[in-house]
Amino acid sequence: MQRNILRPLTNCYISSSQKRCYSKQQVRVRFAPSPTGHLHLGGLRTALYNYLFARSNNGSFILRIEDTDQTRLVPDAIKKLQDDLLWAGIIPDEDPTRGGPKGPYLQSKRLELYNEQVETLLKNGSAYRCFCTDRRLDLLRREALRLRQIPRYDNKCRHLAKEDLAEKLRREEPYCIRFKLVGNINSFDDLVYGPTSYDVAQNEGDPVIIKSDKYPTYHFANVVDDHFMEISHVLRGVEWLMSTQKHILMYRAFGWTPPLFAHLPLILNPDGSKLSKRQGDIRVENYRQSGIFPLALLNFITHAGGGFNRAHGREQRCYSYGELIKQFDLSAVNVNSCKLLPEKLLEFNKLEISQLLEEENNAKFLINKVVRLVSDAFPDRSKDGTLQLDENHVHDVLNWAKNRISKLEDLVSGELAFLWVVPPPSTSAISQSPTEYLRILEEFDRQLASKDADFFRKESLKDWLRNFADTNDIPFEKFMRLLRSVLSGLKEGPSVAEMIEILGQNATLDRVKRALS
Image (cartoon, rainbow, N blue to C red):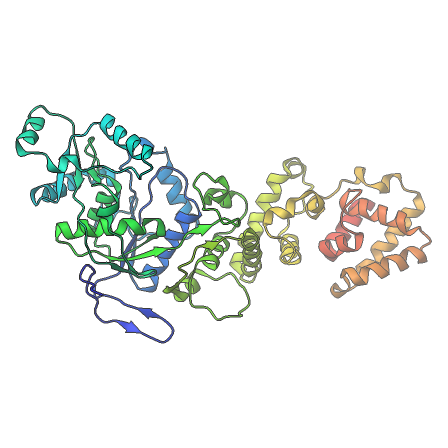
């Protein structure tokens, strides 16, 4: 197979574990979203794989905003997109905010460049002005649909006589500029899907590259920007695979060498349907607001799509940014579409909570996050000082909960509110209990204080509580109601033994003393 349409490669390195080729040119990749909505999982996957590819090859990762479709722009979409990438830890080397040597990084700021470059194509005969009206194009579309054909432009203005062209320009008739598609081109070698052929000229009409408002279309601006920004590799979704031949034709028309292309497979919903931007639950913003940690979301994506050299059978864990960069291998990307399994996301989030607790600074970050979360969940209790939020208590709760919860938000559910809310003495059943019960509670306090930390396990506590009730001649059920009220102020919830285990010795004794006082 001929590869004359691709950049010649040198210094190719091939090992038994992976096959990669690198050119002498520095690796430069880009994520180029349109600010027409929210960043969703598909876009995040594309950004992540570009970022990892750049970092694993000591290259540069560029964020370019493709805002040429002015009719679909969403206010503040650019800022939200950058905020989402920052939250995810995907930091560009060059972008509209930081700037860089190949800017500007907003396509709407590059209009002069596009209009200069399209003149090259007009002069060498690779493009032409099209004066067809919207009404004519609509009639073409309707006729194609009537004949059950795919609508396409019939290339009428490609054959416009010079005299007719000059007359239309003299009358200042509105026009767009179209690119001439040619057939019989070679296949190109996609770095994921391998040799790929598609005769675009046989299936599509000549595409518009400059609209009547002088703004470029995606295809044209994409090619021009990738060339002038010296993009070496284009990693994007497989939905663009069939457009690549069109782009390669434009590179050839300019006399430029195209970058290398790698198309990423579709991400599917659990039922096999394609992800849609209209799905609110796949927005990155939604995951941020629902308590998902960045690395959990990134591991969720990489687990589904492949592209990483990992030992088989290895225990599942939440990989760090450094590990993801080291493991990334473009040749390991799956060619088949991949399904996302929502339960895996919660598993990764649980793993991330456990891993964050292992490092002191990260543990403090979690503690502070829980303190804010609890304060917001119980604002009235926060004001009257009946929330137990000292650092040691929060840390103990996190250690107990790390294998039981999937999100930090689970810690403020109704059944776990007692972890934080100290019941006021006035709400405790002790205020309505016989005097004898007060003596029993004092004895309970004395004996519990003498126990060591290892005693505070649910299994040990169950038997001890029952024996204590029998020894002190108090009905076990009444004793449990009394302790539950003292410890939580609740009538229902986890067993008293589990409550004591969760609260720990200090918090349990503190609440008993508070009730007695």
